[in-house]
Length: 302
Length: 264
Image 1 (tube, one colour):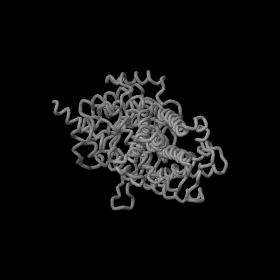
Image 2 (cartoon, helix red, strand yellow):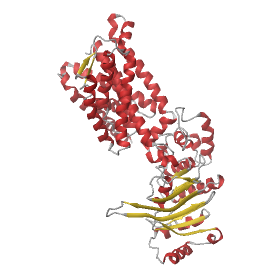
Image 3 (cartoon, one colour):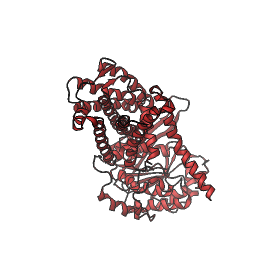
Image 4 (cartoon, helix red, strand yellow):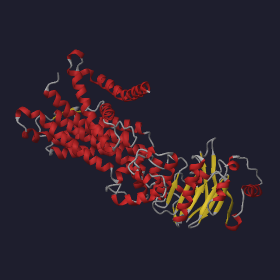
């Protein structure tokens, strides 16, 4: 039903989108800041990494720069909100639109190919035998996802991380405890978009190209992963919430791959966004439906 | 010590809804004093507390805490000197965080926060000892989510959090008003115990004249954004609600129209 290559491909993109889900977890869940900047910071990360790699930079260094670029984009959104009092959603839309121009400027063209460049994946591919080459990116991105997950988990348990969680949960209480809530929002949204920038950089390297339109719908895919993950792994703690992000992203990618590969459904690549919307709707509705069903079952028993 | 001098604050200046909340309010609270504040709705009690805490910035006047001018400082820059318990029992704590995480936030009130672990093992004994004083069994529930606690329990923890680190003043904003009578009494007794034991300087807003006279050692009444009278010491002893009302009418030639002041 699903070829091995398609399966590993889904795992690979799922792990990369796990980073996007981490970012969206920080903005939407931790800070309660609906941030659409990600649709711009994802291709921004890709653009920065692609241009630098083509300029002969070390791919890891180029990826790091993509993280900084994403953080800068997030900081702009947060500053618009905190300092200029623009509604958070609107502030993020403004940055997202602005980034479209910025990305075109950075790349100098709508897309850049990285097919013959050394990327972060190259070294890993050489460690695998030629017939297993498609497993290399999965191994690499698994390591990346786990490292980021552990770092984020430690961060959320730190004094600064706890302040950030308090800022999102109860800003008045946070201020009364001496927390500069504005500063926490700036830091958090920057961190969130830094992760998305990294995801964009890795995605470009895994796909062999950066494209200015590759950010369209990243927010929806990220949300789908987040909400889907939360439905599968109940996020009772920070660690579980972070694990839910990765699980959700992988399951989402696998679901898409199955949907597109199942001939009987007759779906094609252009139906992707429709499938996404349906999956997100299901992910939002199903957990409530499950509770209702459980309630009915227990009532019947009693 | 905290002193407010001639505070003026008008909400919605220049609009039809213009509302002068503070009109030349002045009050000095000395070290170790426990002052109760009363006044009818709209007298400026909450605005005064918010101005002291930094949640609103006054139009003019001067606020000093321990000799430092804090008039223009935002809330978080005053937090190391000013501790606060809100009226809403849900407002003082984060329900999504555990009890120990809430206490860990409070133990660093007004201090720099770093990337070290927030809930340090060295804090835990202190947290348990503090919680044990509440007699609610919370010392065994450190890792429970705050949201699992009742309103009264959460208000008790809020009070504990406000007194976990030293402050120049503790602001209590009708912190028992939203609780049932039994719980309110428990939280009020706890408040008195903590204030006496730690010799705190405190300002407690209450809507009940009876309560205002029963606790603390000085009572201040606000009316239309000003202090209308201020009694302490022997003068205050033996004073009853009736006397307080007479005093108010003498001072202002006004009738107290707000029944809630009498009923409380």
